[in-house]
Length: 180
Image (tube, rainbow, N blue to C red; front, side, top):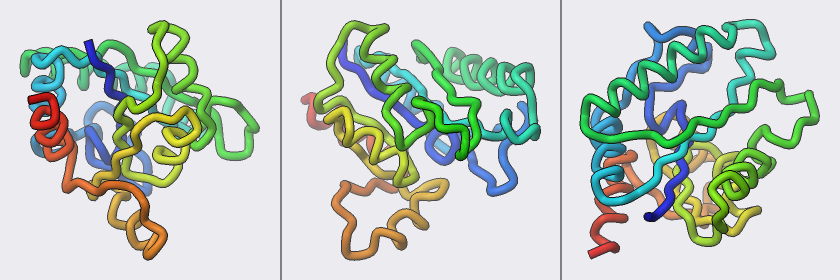
């Protein structure tokens, strides 16, 4: 089986500068649920890694986060796919933890749990911190335009070194085409 690592907000679901604080606010990006199902059907192990500083900031609690993830799992399962694991960092940007992207803690945790290296494993994100975390572990960073992707592209300007895709569905199209 192959492994793929996905950021959550802005890749799978709509993002908000005001944070996604409940299952009601958690809305999938068009085509993302079906894209995850297609990955599953093509022998990919799908893992989600997500910074969730809204917990540290007091915007929502673990129960609300679990309800969001339950909704995500159900939608993916109903589409015929599965998400193997969801790892999250509940810390704020000033907490000096090892897990908050761009630090690679969650990615290294996946490597240990699944007993696999991450070299060239696709990591799909919409922000520079997602891509930087992937770089540290020698994974394959892929940028999507959804979520904060357009901002990331503008911020990087001429320094953009990452492949860019319109959305998760386009990434999956490319990966499955590569697979042959």
